[in-house]
Image (cartoon, rainbow, N blue to C red; front, side):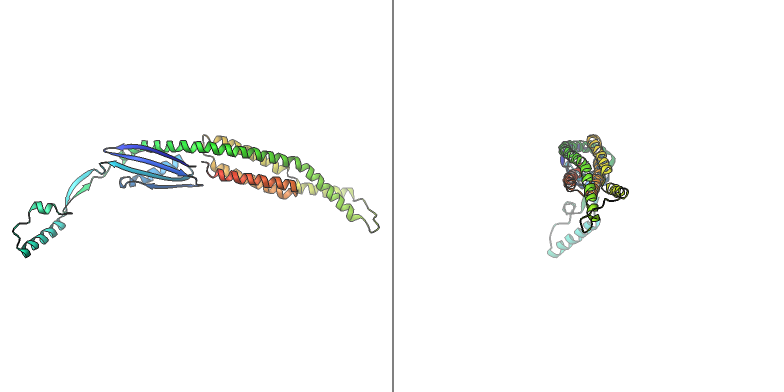
Length: 295
């Protein structure tokens, strides 16, 4: 789901602006852009995001303001200083310059002295940043929850339509079976007629066996029962999504619903049932697209 969160944090003389954005993704993908001082903490930041969210692409941006890195010791680069002295002395000799190579002149040359950065205390820095991270994550989550509620409303309306279609199929199924039985009986009687148009009644026992086999092949009552059960579980999980991550469980149930509707469509061999099954599959496909965005 999509969202945005921002918060600030302070550590020592520096302040940090923390921004996090998310867009829809079936899996979790985390990208970070942080100042150099936070690079050692990136594994912790990544883990914190993974513990809070289970799906989505996340882009985290952290900018540092303030004095920046703490100053450490002043270091002398003696090799570079020797090179400067040698070059300046040669310059003085070649052009007969009156001035000597003094300390002020040498100290002002680039690279002779360097101020090393003092390392930041990673544990203290993480402690200072963790609160700001949590606030940014919460702000992001508020937007994602609002989107999730809208998705749930859309999915619920589609579930109502699917239940109506399944009920229509349930009403049609016994009629379809009776019509198939009549077609079978008529076909057998037609085949038993002779050239003079004399018809013979089929063996009742054999006819009963054939009708039983037909009923077994075309009976979709079990598929409809399982389909209804999966729908109830789906609704229950959708409601539970307010307090827990259910996206992957909903994915699984959608696969099972599709499996049942495919089976009943192939078994029924009825145009009206097939039409209803196609409409159910269309609604399930739309729900599948929405479920990819649910945590």
